[in-house]
Length: 506
Image (cartoon, rainbow, N blue to C red; front, top):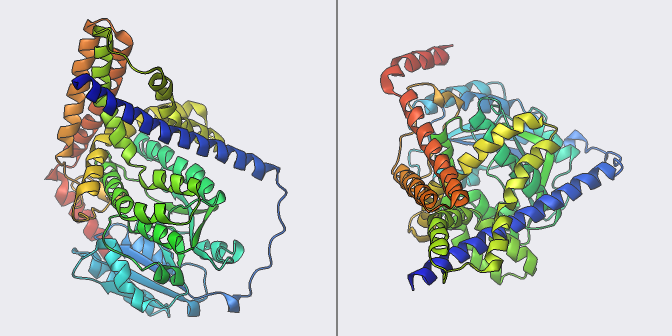
């Protein structure tokens, strides 16, 4: 009875991972076909540009919370956008509880004196977090289109002109949002940032492009893009019942008949988390929020009149982070299954499960293929790929817990800000603390190490080495977090405070 229960859960995990893996492989194949077709296609003649007096009114919104190290940079970047000043409004949506609010308020006053239509909206109640700030600002929006940039973004001065005028992003009246491709200011900072960039490149170079081209539903990424004001209103506005307000609004808009556009040729530079702890917190928020959105939106999606394939892809998209839960289940049960098969001849795994298992790795192929397509040196890709696998495996414990919280939790949870580059200085006031998820990571390390020893003792070296590899991934993930905590010891705080004061007074 116990064997059959374990085997059933194991098979569910294998089938689930295989579905995600095959879907990832299909998207990678479609992406390669699209790239080949674009190389073969003749360049189209550039469309006639709209005269400047016909350019639409645009509102740029800059939501932020305690971003003293990067707040000035994004505000000045927004102010430098090449757009007629009589059709540009900038809203700094500042929920800060530290001196960031004073710094940004002074900067806004300075820029307003130059004739720029810019306002500083400071909430003392952070209810709804980012979604709440965006919703509170909507009655004061003047623009037909709304551009969104998080605090760590630095858009080029021609960003608005390129997407709205040159690309005619909203020429189709049913286009609700337009997303541009994220690139990274600190990509080369360390192996950790390069590994994260490898992960995100698959999303922005493969997944978003394929979903857009195939007319599948896809999401606005929360920053580095534009919304049509009418679309936001028609879809029900920004809502605060999930931690991924961008994904939620994207699907509500799709159900109302709006579509998104993805423009991979226009960059939206921003920052990657430079610490494992920050990366883990960011991933946990995305995991919990996406499952909250799936719980909220899957019913309406499946009841909609969209095609069967569109619904299938939307389901996988909304439930994407459940892949981590499936992987954790697999890693817990797989050693037990291996030991059971080798110790009892009456126990066996169906042949089809053994054939399906390799397909679950389909998503891994995208990492090196995308980097090679970008023209990167294959000798640099290897170390990044190894750490990418370590990060992906290590974070699945934390993400699995977040998926469970998103699935069964009654409240949306806290929107934990992602630390920016200035935060990683030793002793920064914004440093992230360790949480209880590390206990799960330690438990997984212990479990897999124990089974590696057991399987080696029973002369099953291949499976033993596989367990040892996964255990090493979790152990490396834990040790990196411990090292970061050591670097962030408070003894360096006076140095940081002195440096911050010098920046503020300059």
